[in-house]
Amino acid sequence: MSAGPVRNPLHRIVDLLTMYQRTLLMVHQADTAEKRATALDSLRACHPAVWKHCSSRNIAIRRLADPAKAWLTQTNSRFVGPADLDLVEECAVTLSGFAIGRPPMSMPDIYSKNYHTEDELWQTWEKQGEMVWQLDYLIARLQELSARAGELWTPPTSNNEGCAADRDQSGARQGEGGKGERPRGRKSDTDPKADKRVADAMRVGHYRTYAECAKALGMTPREVERAIDRDRKRRPPPE
Image (cartoon, rainbow, N blue to C red):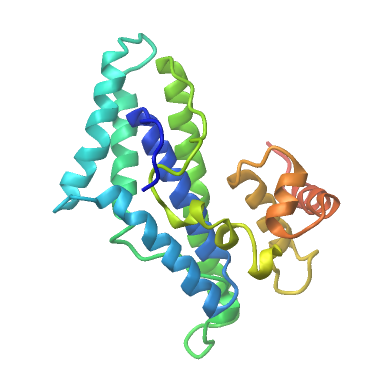
C-alpha cells in the first residue's frame, strides 16, 4: 500500500467505489479471454482494501460504515439526516458484496453460443452493465453528501488503497504497448451499442474533456464527440 495522507472515512468509501467501478468496467468491456483474465485480476486486487483483517462480511461492513457515520455525526451539520447514514450503510454493503458476488460478463463475443443465442448474451450483458453504471449514482450521492457535511470530496493524490486498477493504467485505460483500445460494437464504430459504450465511458470515467476520454479509449477527440452526439440523438426525448 502506498503512503499518502489519511482520507476522511466517507471519502475513503467514495475512493473504493470509484476503484471498483473502474475495474468492473474493465471486466465488462473486455473483448478477449486474455483481457477478461487481466481485468479479473485487477478486480480481485481491490478486495483486500475492503476485507483486510476482517473475518466476516459483517465486520467488513462495520469497518467501512461506522467511521463514516461517526464522522458525519460529529460534523453536527443540520444538512445531514438519518437517510444519509442509511446511504453510507448501503454503500458499505455494496462494497462488501463485490468479493463474494459474481463479476459481470465481458463482451458477448468471447462466449460460446452453444447454450445461448447471441441476442440473449447481449441482453444479459446490457442488463449486467446497468449495475456497473448504477455505481456512478451511488458515488455521486456520496460526493454530494460529503459536500453537505462541509468537506468536499477530491480525488486522492495517490492510490492509498492499492487497487491494481488505479496502479496499472495500462489495464484500465490502455491496451498493450500503451495504445488505447476503443470500445467495440458488433458491427462497426457507428453501431449504437459502440456509441453507447463511448458515452458511458465518458460519464463513468469522470473525464473532464473529450481529449481525456479519447486518450483513454485510443480514439481521437472528434471520434468521441461524434459517438456521444449520435448516442444523444438516439435517446428518446424527455416527457
